[in-house]
Length: 353
Image (cartoon, rainbow, N blue to C red; front, side, top):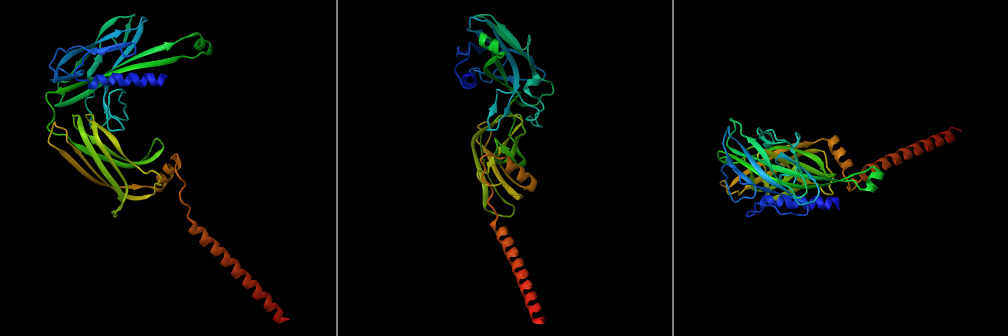
């Protein structure tokens, strides 16, 4: 039940990112709501339900939202600025913080570095109380053209303290979350997007064998309507061993993600391979763009064995019966020759007598 409520709350919160005609969020069962207040600066789209703002280097301003508590009880809500990234499904993540491991090297100006919640991250609302919450944004004087993308993330925590939980010394946290997108376009959109192929390597994805092709969007732009198609062969061969196709994906500015080539029931075999990968975007912000990569890579014997052993629901590799047959023949020949030698030796003894 806890996971179901969290899932429903996230879905309802994300609707605020895409609903074009509504600027106020109604009570959704989460017990509170958020709604955008018209910002004091230029909007790229004034009808947007999220913050779609045109900003300039050196500019400082404040954006605000209404928080309303629909409960009779006091409620504590935490709000934070999150920097967006591209998740493993090829979609923009607004609902999780960007980790250092996931941060792309091309990201020089994360949203979380230019945004700050005024009066601290925690808001205490009395029963049925409504408050205005402010976020201060400072655009550095050195900021370049393009998009800084983030979200204003809100999370409510309720701690259950009924008698049974007290007796068992346990507690339960129910989280109800919203994410309100904040898009900052510095001066204007960039002239054209760019994608790079960074690495190709075998890995495990939820304990499934996979070869990951890591693609990077190294410009300050949201790249949408992205299609990927690829195949993998043995180096110097033309037969396709593994292939993949991803349709209508979206990448966050200055981010990367792994395109998966799943091996299914096939064992990962050590050796040299070649990746052929194409990408194209029909995003209307630019002319149609496409990229094509060919990259050789190697799978070591040690790495292949580790991945094959760690994979779940993976069939055992086919046994090499030929080596057992050859071993049996060698043993049989050895004993045959030994028997013949012993027999001949016995015959010689009889003849000498």
